[in-house]
Image (cartoon, rainbow over all chains, first blue to last red):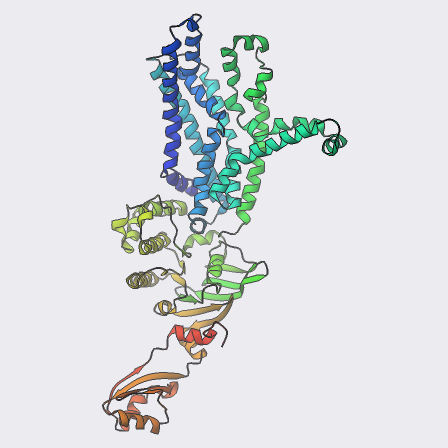
Length: 317
Length: 303
């Protein structure tokens, strides 16, 4: 608790946390409302809205529920995602700063219990991410309510319980990247390098898979794809993307994309019903939440074990 | 019970021994100087005592309990360059350390800031602090929880003479409370003004453990060099030669002369008995630095 209290104290004295919160809670909803108002002003009274499609879109995206949902979904589709940016910046503050400011030699004497130090830092990182996420849900609701003053939206409606559940799940899933960020920043002994690695390493490894996968399917048989075929690993190899870090990490935030896509594309909804078919891969919704939860739990356990082992054993410069 | 115990501490990096079989004991309340040239192994030893690095061999204990461990909560440290979170004020840095340690009453932060005379700069961001202010803030931080043991590594580095003198006075006040202090420095003139005992380390090995006078004696200080002045210079020279002392330097009204330790206290009396009117007789200060240099050799090689 001492470590968590101290780190919480430190966290809120760094400007970057306010910038992240400002971007997520204020700038993003305001921009969405401004863009929505411009779109509504341009096409709200035109033939486009004859069947009320613009009004429906506004309700889906900028009502209190819609805006809160958009603040969950949107960050998951950025590149790199806003979630991973938050994770790395907070990790860089909590772990990277100790290195860059040469503070380990002080911190680990003042609080020699290294398990407590690391656990406190992880708790504070998760608390900060929780504040950011649930603050976004609240901000979405508040700004959405403001939007009803100048947009054709209504305050009521929306499955808030389900949405908050997705926020909660997304927050819990962020434990794995937090542990990964702590691990990489501590291992490479550099906040900047660690941040870059967290942002790009998982996607880089997944891109290598795609390249290898393509090569393995080349015809005629060559030395590389022959190895895969000889080892009879094709099924496991094909199933690998189901266990990719990024694909599973953002499953909760991307889950509502399915209903959004159905809403905006009546034909799409009619064709696929609740299944989006080829759109699932594009939207990243082909992975179920229970599956993603298990995968992220495994990643968390792996990264957590590596992090604690490294942190407890390594000498401090 | 010893406040600090190092038993055969060894730290090996690759094939190089940064510290090799260093062992010593420091009793509660002692102020001990840890001297040696840069790269001698002082900081590595202190880091092992502070639990920051693990010894390759041997063990360290503070207040009888093994390090690293919870006993480090009784220790205050300043290891090398003082470091802080620059985006926080001096007071906030102390608040952070107090929260991290736990059990520090809020008023203690004000007390320590006042003790190191930083109360007027408490609300300034640390990035705006001078080197001297950072050193004092580091001392304040190390004192927050009334530590029983202080490990100070080159605490006066980068301070001007006034800062050094102020720091020394602060340290004396801390020592007066009964805290055990192990202070490392390569500025030996500084250490000798504070310490009761000296540990001398060179090339990772402990070369000496004892009091300053023992170090001087071991380093070959069998003679005391006196600067003697008299009203009649030639008479002084003659008397010294009659007593069997050959002056190292001779002037119009005085001389420098090496006198055996055993005869030093009688020098003035014997000169007066010989009819020399001595106006002053001052033993030149055989200090820690000269004794240490004799111990290890000017070039760092053992003499």
